[in-house]
Image 1: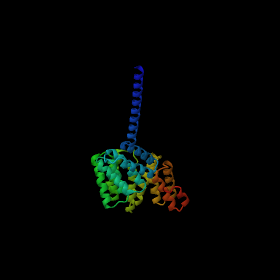
Image 2: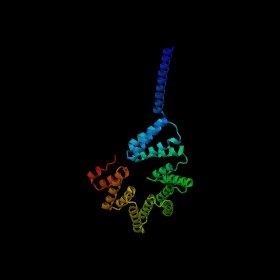
Image 3: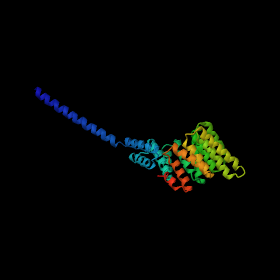
Image 4: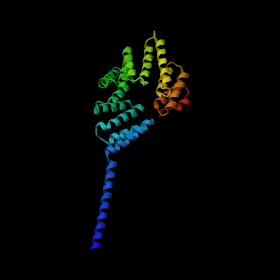
Length: 284
C-alpha cells in the first residue's frame, strides 16, 4: 500500500513538474512574441542610437517598432517621433513630416509633433509651408499659451514673412516665459541678421545687435554647442573665416556626435578648399 502510494506521488510530482515547465515555456514564448514588449525593446534601442547620432540605425529600430505593433494608438507616439527625428537627421524630410503628422492624427493634443512639423516646413519656406507653420504655431499657442516653442515657431514663421515687429513680439514673449533658454535669444539674433539683409540703411546697426546677442549667449552658455554653431554660421556668412572656424570647432568639441555641427564644419572646410580637414567631418 505504501509502495503504491509512493509511486503515485512520484508520478504526480513528475507530471506537475512537467506541467510547470511547459507553462513557463509558454509564458516565455508569449513574452518573446508579445507585440508590446517587442515594440518597447526597439524603441529603447532607437533612443540609444539617437543619443549617439546614429540616425540610420535609429530609423531601423523605430520602423521595426511600428511594424511589430500594427495598432494606431497613443503607445506608438514615441516610435513615430523617434522615426521623424532619425529621418530628419538623415535628410529624409518627407518621411520626417509624415511621422509628425501621423502623431497629430493619433494624438491630437500632442504639441511636440506640431512644433517639429512646423520647424521642418520653415527650413525651405514657401507660401504654403509658411501658412501651415503659422497654423501649427497658433494651434499650439491656443492649446497651451505658456508653451515657449509655440511662440518661437510663430516668430520664425513671421521672420520668413519678414514681419519683423510681429516676430520680435513673439520672441520677447518666449524669452519672458523662459529666460534661461537660449533658443529665444538665438532666434532674436537671427531676426536681427535676417532684417539686416533686407534693410541696407540700418544693416550695420542690426548686424551689431545680432553679434552682441550671440556674444551674450556664448558668455552665459559657454558649454552650449548650438550657441557656438549658430554664432559660427553667422560669422561664416560674413566671411569672417578664422572666427567662424573657432566657433564651429568649439561646437564639434562640445558635441562630437551631432551631425549638424559636423556637417557645418565639413561645409566650412570644403568652401575653404581644405579638403583634408573636410574629410574628418564628412557626413556619414
